[in-house]
Image (cartoon, rainbow, N blue to C red; front, side, top):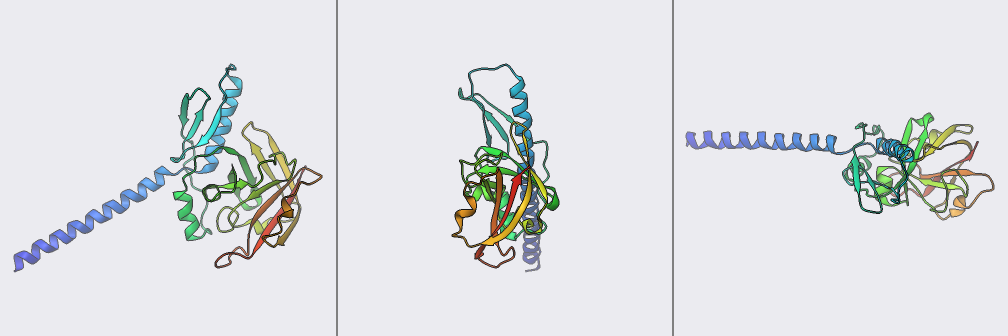
Amino acid sequence: MKNSLFYIEKILLLGGLALILVFLAVKIHAKQGHYNSVGQVEALMQSNMQLAQAPMNSDTPIFLVGANDSIEIQTSSNHKSTEKSASEQSPNMSDWSVIRKKDYHEANVNSPVLGLLEIPQIDLKVAIFDKASEPHLNKGVARVLQRAKLSGEGNLSIAGHRDGFFRKLGQVVLGDIFTVRDLQGNKFNYKVTKTFIVEPKDTYVMKATEKPSITLITCYPFYFVGSAPERYIVRAERI
């Protein structure tokens, strides 16, 4: 009987050690397997600048962010080259919701990236994707209307999750200046002119404006439990 208990204890001990090793392996894989979208965009910009300086050919480059967070340069003749981002640092998620942290790491994005949104007042630097789909909003922020340009003509509307990248958007105040950069390296500066709260049905905030402008949109209140009933808006004009 004692021998049987001894062997059972040994088996349980080994099983526990095996589970611990599996857990550690999963954590290490998650840390190494997910790269910051900001690093992806900056790598894209660098790659695009290098292509601009290279001899012209008939291939049209298409920039994609792969499911493994690598940078893929794909041409019309299907020649591909892949470049890993130099940055492996994840965004600061200290005030993100648990669900949003999980969704960020599990987001499977295989889509063109438009550029980079930088709001230094809230320490935000984030990739801009096209179309406000759930994977895009988990991995970055997204342009809502495709007709809008990053230069602000037509009122560039950008959506983000209130419990993710736009968690601190409410701290942006009148007069703050932030930046949008495209993949060609063009830099567009915007100055905040208005912040306000609207109903979800108030899509007029995305209508074209007379001056080049940007409209940042997120759900409100920021820490509301469940589906937030309102939308928080930051409007800024290009300067």
